[in-house]
Image 1 (cartoon, rainbow, N blue to C red):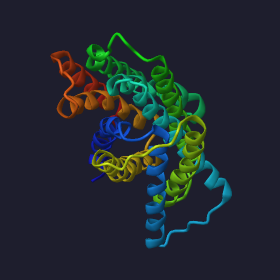
Image 2 (cartoon, rainbow, N blue to C red; image 1 turned 180 degrees about the vertical axis):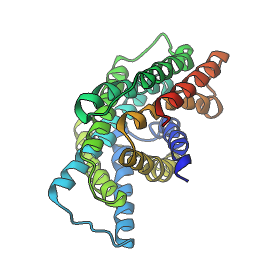
Image 3 (cartoon, rainbow, N blue to C red; image 1 turned 30 degrees about the vertical axis):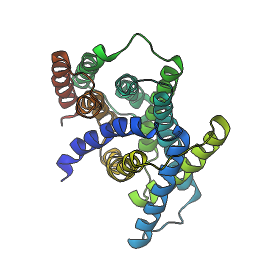
Length: 282
């Protein structure tokens, strides 16, 4: 089963870019995310109780998990959702945050003492080239500056979160770790929501279905897999999977959102996949 975890992660993580577009049509971005992670924290707490895992752990471990949650859920997802709300396309947002593997590989050496080989760098470059190919035609002439800034903040948040989670890899179980991450993100996003937007959630069918997908498949599925991959592998190799997210998102957008898919997109996907294979193979 572990062999399929990277593929499942890419699929579920990419789907968040699609379902997120529907969510911001029915709710303000930070209110929607705070609602999502409040529900997620409750379920992870119940999981911890059910499996009789130790919840009251060292305060230092809680702090480390909380920082990861704020960076991943608050800055990364908050930036992505806000970029949607001001009109940035899912594909362009995916391109910007898709640069995360490059920053992670640059920082993982001096911070985590991980060795990034020449072959890995070749894979990283191919992954970036493939990503640019896929969404190059999707960049429109009218690009909201706020959306670009928000996506850059999301990129920085995801990069620091990956490094932080790997550097302070604790002995907490995934359920307890994710509980504290989601709880910290809930309070952080509520604070942002009440200070920078007029909170609104319209519980229509579009919101319920899209939010349900993100809670079950993304928060419980993709994010748990990501934490597992970071715990069992290197930060640099795990982050390279993010190169596959923009092209996968582009394909999903073609079928779900009706966005165009060109032959160069298919070529880019193949290049990107080959690059990720080179960068992550043992």
